[in-house]
Image 1 (tube, rainbow, N blue to C red):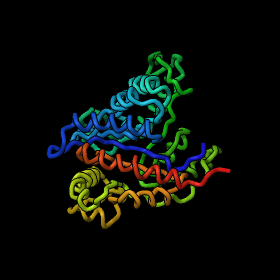
Image 2: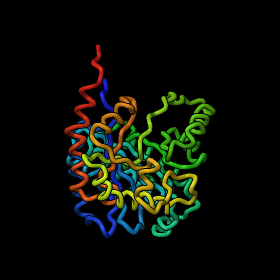
Image 3: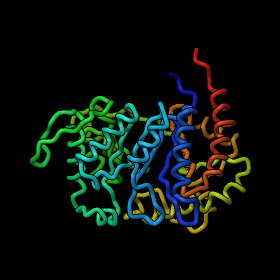
Image 4: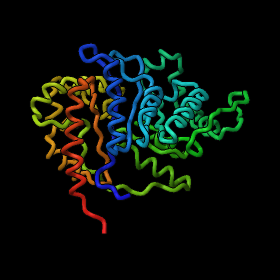
Length: 336
């Protein structure tokens, strides 16, 4: 089917700072919004993971994805990322297989090695073994998802049920280093770079190994990291700006190297508008943005960013539903 809009996604990390709405409201709203997106023809729900945070960042994306799977029919579920090094590989294989079954084969998984030492200390995991643990995890997932018995650390293991998708859900490795990119190529999985980094190194390693390289992608139209739609952008920003600021500054505080993160700490929400890190658009302005991105691109909304109140988030999503998507779809060229 020919596309008339960019690929459409909702993303949730479910931060719930103490000064915002409680977590139970945000989690319930996220599931409702996923159901809304499924009915409206969105393509993907993205869920991410962190631990030992001050604002309750989503620690269990697999559990959350299962809740969303039970309320949706066709939209894909993308775990981006699962911190694979903090989980036992066989247990991870089981949980992801069950999720693929529950979603009837709608799961994609990006595996992350992790980068916050606090998380490794909390789980009693050796920080220095991340590269070897990632290799073991990918190899274990592949063996486990055959449904046949295999050797794991000296034991004979079998994982059932098998995933619905033959061979299991598509796998990627997410990372911010050349080593992670080349590791993904050697393991034969996709590469999900933060900020578009080390794509050339991933492709070079694939070519060196004699493996097919993905086709070159045309440069994508600029997509602001955060987009909110409102009839009155100034009034809306007065509500959501502090939440977006919180999210950006928390991410910036996690980074070990500032050159490897797109998040830079700022002191005033308006700085995010000035740098283009966030935009609040009227419906016609959002229509123009989607047209510039085009049907080959991607458009992502983070409606509950930093604990944005669900009522405010729904106001934005309803404008997308009533005024943005119909206009983009109506203006798309008709296939002949």
